[in-house]
Length: 145
Image (cartoon, rainbow, N blue to C red; front, top):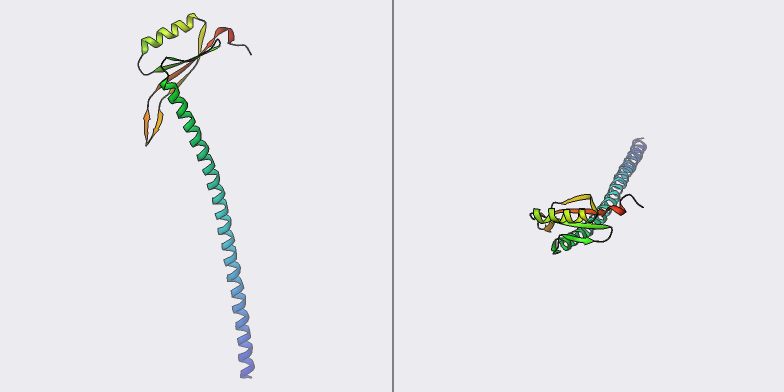
């Protein structure tokens, strides 16, 4: 009876160890699955962030190149057509700017928008103050479609 008792005790112990092993394996698999889900979500988020950063970087580069083109333009009038005039008022040059506004007003243009260009990013954390852009529209085009 001792041997039967030991054998049944051993079988019971094996069953409990086997059950415990299954529980540990299930818990391990559950944790691994959750970590995999988190990893996948993180990779997806990182991919989206990378795309946005690339998009913003290319837009900032394009914007910087355009602002540089405007800034290097010799005249205060960056662009002028029959309908629109875009004027750059660099820091300083107040009298010249006022004379130009007077001239454009006499020609029939009205200021419709002003946009401050506070800084041009130059890289390495440096910025250069530029001035303002003034958008004028000829009166014969205001309110028409």
